Every structure is written in C-alpha cells, then in structure tokens.
Image (cartoon, rainbow, N blue to C red; front, top):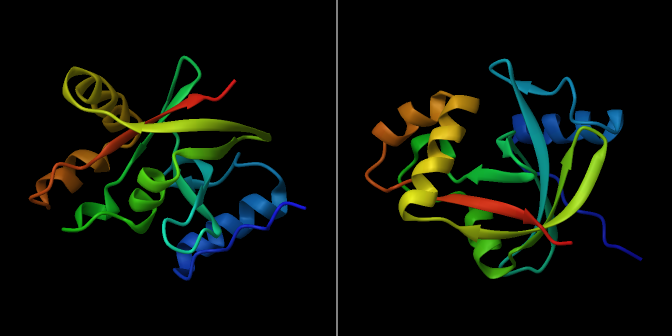
Length: 143
C-alpha cells in the first residue's frame, strides 16, 4: 500500500493541495492567475511523502520547479527533499507521472530560469529580494 502524502502546515498551501485532491485535477488552481502542478516529494529526514503545489513550468515534457520561497534567504524545505530523494511524482491536470529531478546550472539554468519567469513573472522579483541564487530543478520523465 502506498503511504498517503502529508499536507503542508501552511494554510494557503494546504488549501491549494486540498482543492487539487478534492477536484482530482490541478486545473483551475491558480496563483496570481497562473497555473500550478502538484509535486509529491519524499522528506529528506523523515522519509514521509509530502505534497507541494508549485508553479507550472513545462517544456517538451519536462518541468522546472523553482526553489524561490518568495525570495526568502533560505531554501524551501522541499529543496532538501529533492536533493536527498530526486524521484518525485507530479500531477498536471489529471495526469500523474514519475520524474527524476536534477538541479541545473550554467546555460541550462539560464534557459529554464527564463521559461520560469515567463510562466510566473514574480520569480524575477523574488531573485532581487535574496542574496542566494534561486535554485532551479528540472524534472525529466522517469520512463
């Protein structure tokens, strides 16, 4: 039996996740008018599965997830989950697939950063609010 993933303790994140789960789709769940997808990670320390709604940044079947945390000085908790356990699931609409995440750098990061800012312009502002280079992960289909 597959262990059910845990909901976020953060109200707005939990509410987004509950809406996706109750509807069975990510369609219609928006942040500032932009679509999200539902990422499921494995906790770096706990090993528990965790739901994380993230902005939808898709290109040719791969997805980017941006560890912005709104421009906070530290990475979001899920950053550490992806580093420890790069195999994730992602739901886009009603389709859920398994992906393998890798953090990108150099030209590959630049290309995905540009796509990410096009999908969610707030990322550019978040980068100005922090001294860290906001990490970008690319999720490639496992199969």
